[in-house]
Image (cartoon, rainbow, N blue to C red):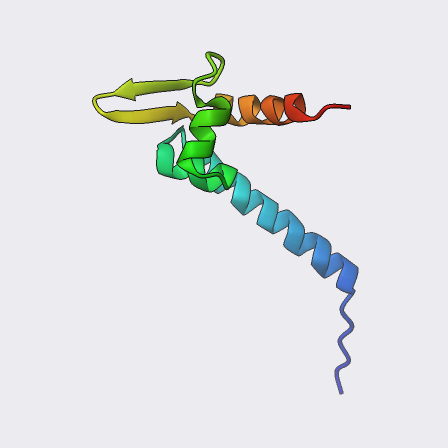
Length: 89
């Protein structure tokens, strides 16, 4: 008879590590976001985005034709800083 024991903590750590790698891989694939992706990433409506930070000169965006393109790496950095700026300590 074979008896197999599984260390649940080890399995959990392996799962979380693999999940993080896959998330990082997907994030690395997107260089630009469009407004739809920006709304998805921030969980905000388009009106809220425009009201809160879209027209901030520090926000990395360019309009090409009639479509906005947001440079994803800089946008993430901006959004992290912007969120902390909103917190009044």
